[in-house]
Image (cartoon, rainbow, N blue to C red; front, side, top):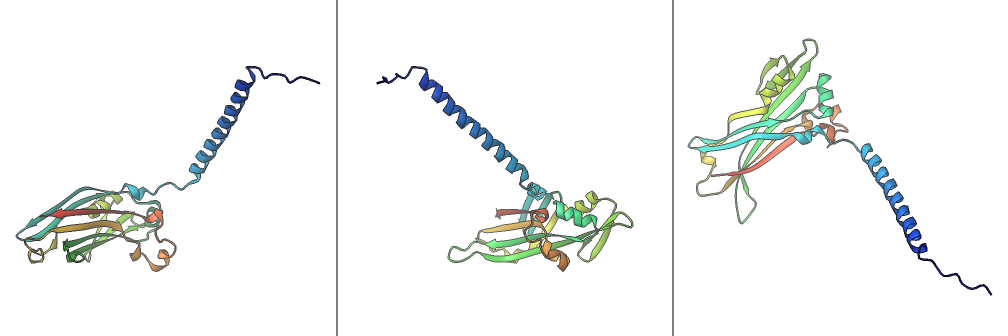
Length: 205
């Protein structure tokens, strides 16, 4: 009868090394697959970079005023549309609320500004319409500069702000796809290629 051969001291470390090497190989393969999958994901829309470089509220005896400056780049879908002479619409909106502990906060005032910008391929200029008035700009940067800022914008009358009460402002600046030509609205929805907005919540005395 053949006697059992005792396991040498080298056998266990050898087996352990093989096991660790197998798991390491699997981990490397998994990492490669994850990196490859990440490359296939859509890139984030440039609209994520929209921000307010400044925002101020002034409350005095004449009413409530807002100053703002928005910085942004057009998302890919909107840029392609503008290059094809599709008009784009930008909206700045302010809502003023008064705190109420016993019910929903009361909206006491609101204000809205809408700009329409369109590229004119025959003259290679940009036309911006605001408040029924239109102005032509030689470059896109100049056209956007006319929309990015608001100075001394009156958003509420003095009588709408109640004394001895707490108020706050909700501000938004956005590309409004609901104002696009109806056929273009189909399929856009919340597509990241069209997403551009920035918001601000701020209390005031």
